[in-house]
Length: 237
Ligand SMILES: [Zn+2]
Image 1 (cartoon, rainbow, N blue to C red):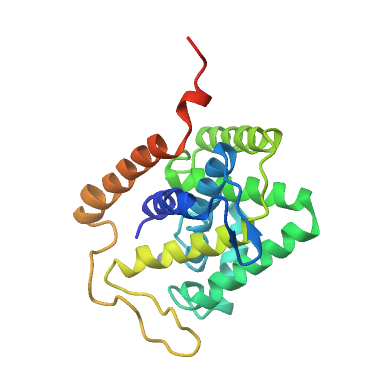
Image 2 (cartoon, rainbow, N blue to C red):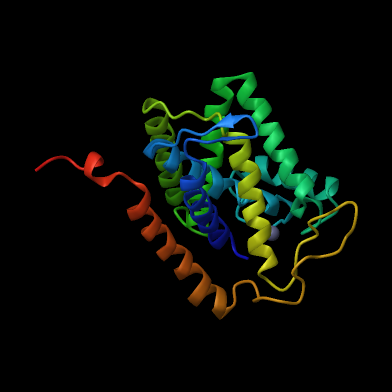
């Protein structure tokens, strides 16, 4: 699946679970999801839904922060046995989620930096930065990322759920890739069996461009109407 479809699936995925999580406690994390947490979680999930492709040279995430993400990509590719291997396993999702949660427990400042980096990846995946990576689009992306991170920070977004959101974002990536023909080795390293292999659509095919991407976009619009307390948010006329 392509970068922007993965990023969109991250947003849809988070928005879809908000009604089930809000007001509940899951794995020791209590979810209190207001508008700020819905936006923050959607973007965190969108960025996280691009992390597994850090194993590929040409992916959106690998090319988001230049030499930094390219070096990271080289390391991940080596550690996890090449493209669509270990980084596409449940173990990887748990690992990423745990590292993020550890970061959150360690320092609130580190979380803000991490959120900033993840949002930059999300916006890049959503197409805010052009594929050609011109300086202008990089600047626009950086400004938007900074502005949104700051807005979420000043509105006091609580990131206690960030580890779970990152693991969930990775998992949504696997679902997206399972829908394509190559499949995903979910149980790596125990078995290399690829779930969803030879079924589904081809990456960047007509099906993905004309059906998957528009459906995800419509889902976001509908969920936005459904989830937000519009009467409270809109100014009274
Ligand atoms: Zn992938």
